[in-house]
Image (cartoon, rainbow, N blue to C red; front, side, top):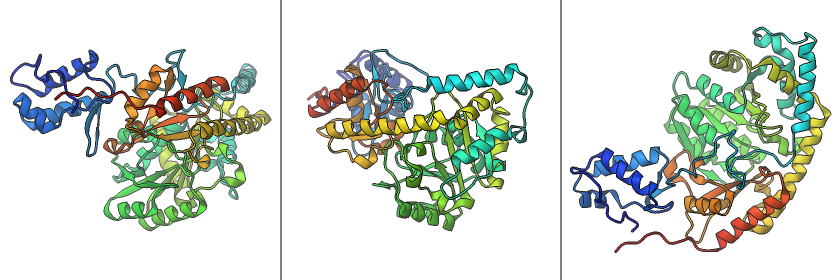
Length: 464
């Protein structure tokens, strides 16, 4: 059992939640507790300290909320990181220059600077010549970007209309506005047991309960989704058919149809994330929206297919739903800057955009081959979305592996950041294959991870 060198040392009596939390924080900060160390069971700690089990439980929970510890069902509470270096990297932070960052999913594999620069120049010329309004615009007055977005988002064999499009400040804003609109009358949000962290934060902002659903090799399990809908009030379900984040799994058309039937039976709106669609050829794309078009909301943005610097996103929804989402978006931001939407319109209309997508697809295919070579357990079909879900073995915990990887100069994302129910997080890490520009740096980073995975983790502190 991993435990403090002296669990009572430095603690005032009687022990309170605050004093125990402060003591544990101090032990983490001083390195007496390391990532991966297990705290003593609650009842045992309470007996040693002479306090109620509830006191220990609340102190442990405070550490979890602070990101210093995490619980695992059937195993206990484990230290995450004393200096919080394993906190999920925030968008916009460059971090250490000597780190090969495989944690944040940006497609830097192909430089978009020239594409963005040309669009900025065109927008600047338009502005200088008086061709761009400087006042507030209603959605109807910015029809060009909505028409372009409708073509960009239209599933194969369909054609969306401009009045079904809501422009947002990025895909994250699209998800948040959609959740706020769909859950305003109550009802929870169903999602994969492992999901995009932005879904977790958006559900929290909407004050909506998140219901994790069991997964299999194609993502959400239809039977588990059916069971959830029968026992709970579910307003919407969030799905990622083309590339499931973080696992990279892809849904077949049959799976999409199965989930659509469940949603239709229970009146659940499908929120379908199409952010990774560009990585598949158009004929290979599928989605739940093909089987449930009147009750599906599509969300996407330009952060992956262009660059995170361009904060423009889109929602496509049947008109009644689009009006609901537009009302929320207007309340939050009034409008997206017309300067940004003009830049986005130029990019989406530029022949260089399609050329970039082709290069990114080719680059990711090459990166996937390298990952599969170094980690044969990875399934090739789950790598085509630019993500690798690395399940750990040999006694490794996800946090300990991430800490050791960071020490080697490679940053990865532990599974707990993606777990809709934190205590259900597996021992796995996510790698983003396109987030490093140089292929040599990318290969060395994966080689370092493969070497690390092949050796046993350093043992925890053990006391008799």
